Every structure is written in C-alpha cells, then in structure tokens.
Amino acid sequence: MYKNTTVGGVLSFARGVDFTCGYNARQVTTGFIDGDDKPGMIVTNQGRASTFIFVNTSVSGTLSFNSKVDFANTPGSGPENRFYS
Image (cartoon, rainbow, N blue to C red; front, side, top):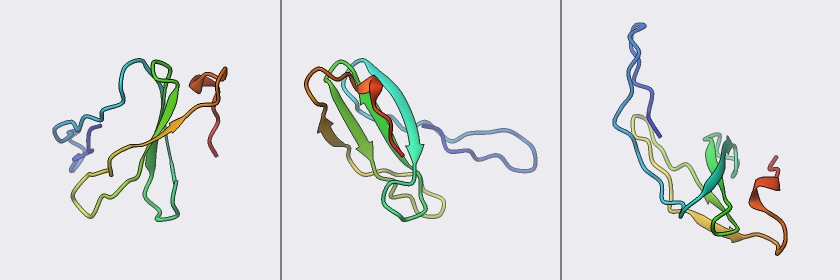
C-alpha cells in the first residue's frame, strides 16, 4: 500500500507498506470495518481458503494497520465468492 503524499498537484507516494497474506491472495477491498471512520482492508486468499482483515490504526501523517485477523472459510466455499458490506 502506498500513502498518497501529493502536494500542489505534483503526484507522489510514500514508500510502500507490505502486508503478509500467504500465497494466492485473490481480492482486496476496503471498507469501514469497526466504526472508527478509517477504512480497513479485507483480503481473500484462495491458497489458504481464508479471509484476512486488517484494521486501520493510522494516525495523522502515519499509515498503519494491525496484524491480520484470519477467518477460515466454510468448507467448499471459495473466498473469492465472499461479499462484505
């Protein structure tokens, strides 16, 4: 993930932040997960048949997320078929 550091119309990004999700991550989405008005990140992982949630813990000027919370998927259902709202 790259924090947007654009100023005055000059496009720029901070150094990237990596997230460990195992192998074969399929889909990434963001959403307001815990009511704190900061978008968290949800990643489905076909390789591990699981879904990971990263809670946004950023404060002004610093991009950060908690360690992932791992949810196993129901047997026979692929994580790519999940829908989060």
